[in-house]
Length: 484
Image 1: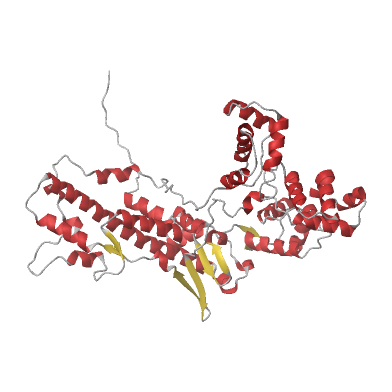
Image 2 (image 1 turned 45 degrees about the vertical axis):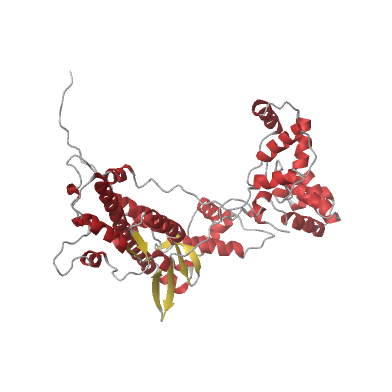
């Protein structure tokens, strides 16, 4: 038997305005401009540029004439005059179906042909039978964005049989792969780094140095990658000078030939600073990029339309639909303008707190002056949520006298030095980078030796911590830093 009972439940839900604000805050300048352009195109009640009536309050007062007519501000319109009691406008319910995690998924694409099509266009210059063309086309389709074919020939042979109904052997596939590897850029279609480098060397003008480089890659690739130079000299019976020339030839090659294609459709990010910090008379001056502060207002023409519909005594169905549409667009325009103003304020307040927290660094540009700073430090400072600070820090750039940097780079954890003081891990990494930069490349410093040097400088950290920081700095181990 079914039982009925009441249950009270307390829950929190973001309003559509809050969702819209959070999405706007996390957008960098260029993405924000695209979002602004989209809103202006979709909402005829929203206009950009200066207007005689700038504020929303002035806009509401604009239509209070001297004869005490009613204001036609959007919030004063009685929609009940047009709707029945049980009818709710769709625009009031649909926004609640979205959450703050529903990010915009539209991605801009670069113009031009793809890397794959670029290779197929070259393949057209070869005389191939229908079956050979299909196999070669399949091989080109198997090339990744770096220019490699990562799959074994046997797997490709099986795929040709199952998906293309083409039954062939490894020998035929290898012969057509040789043709694919003749395409530009040199090295494309290689199945390994070793083969990629050798293919590029074969395209170069033949010389004793080039021939030696090919021989080293073919016979001693493992020893070459591990930089066992003495073994290479002994094995190939060459001088140190000859080895240095061969290594120089190899180092000039491109390990990722696919990345060199200028028509590649991968999006190139152009950094536009969201903030600018300047030093004026010894004091820090913060400004928000003007592109983040557009001038927007509600359309006067659109407002006059609403005034006309409100004054109309005919409450027909078409009149009701029109007033609903206008009300929706007016609400959306006002929400958007308000969200942009809050976005500007949030961005400025957050960056201002970061600037003053790291004042010593911004005045000197010395990364050793960066204080330990986590998201919670700034969130507590400005009395906002950590997630809001994270949205600002993760996607915004600031232009400083020392270059343009991502704001999140100024955040770091703290460690204790030998005097018990909190120092930023950024400071330790900078010192580590300096020490490695000054080492002898013929005898690079090991992680153990680096840990001892840092300890001598007042930073007692373990060898594995040194290794972690070195990897974060994208610096290889001592053996791979060795030069002859």
